[in-house]
Length: 440
Image 1 (tube, rainbow, N blue to C red):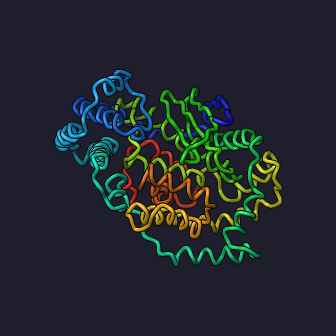
Image 2: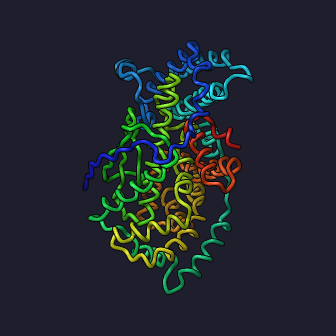
Image 3: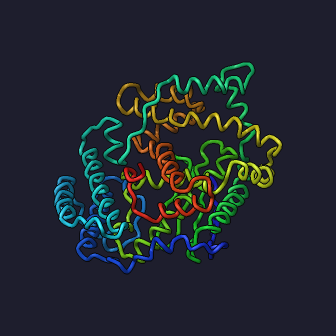
């Protein structure tokens, strides 16, 4: 750790009491707790914890009974045994398929458990030394396949940027020089992030009824392959870590505050714990298996949540008024910065292409980093960090951009351009066990 911030950020009652979640939980008394399903769900949780003994990245969060984790640690199940137990559990689930007229959340629950179990089996296969092509892996783990984008798609955007950032030198050098004017100084990070978090929380609480005691702690860390991470602790508490290895640009303040906090991962986990674990008594939601369809929903809603919380105009106005001054940056250049960033955002899928080619063995690590520098405009240091992410998390990269696009299409088809309706649809998705394939 190079720098710490241990700041308790507490939530409260929703400012604008909108009964958005009432319809979601009104049927709690209807088939609230199916003992047979709960027993199978228990077995699923224990299987996830068993896989976690072989894969330190697998269990992203757990807040179920402590003795289940202790048992998993004390008696490590071999991978072959986990496969056998997963197959037995799959047969049990098949025999408990709910009737078509059952409560929608009950039907979604069964689909969720079945598909999560299939993803668990796939992850175990990979741990056993099996190999899958990038698209096959993402489909089996995350219930989705990212579209293929030709180089020409990115080249067209790069031409536009070349015009926007005219001058001597290569485009990547010009972009890096331009962006250097928008780095948040290290000694101002805390005040900038705190201001961003407070605003994201204020906007979220206007539409989401959160428990009084929800909170999270922020830490600044180093030597990670990611830029930010939410570690949900249970009891409505998260640990959010921000990686300060590389320069942090002003746009990351709102992005991370929304994505990791409000209305992103923190709110997502709080709502699942409150409405599915505590109210419905469904134990499977007390564990989060990272390499599973749940991650596409989690990352997709976290990224789309930025747009739910802020329109482009609202975000620009807030950053000009609050964040740019807090960072000691020129607020008169905010609009210019976001004009360029809106073009750079069109290169988001370049990371998927680099990962696909690298993990499929078509290019090596150095070539993947060079490709990211050329087509995603990443500096060499950031591109190298990204290839480390590929090594550690593999096809997980699709969950950010494809996840956001699937979530956006799903929510906007149900809400149109009406902000309250968009919040309603967004929160309904956060508090449900819907699968990625259910977004189409």
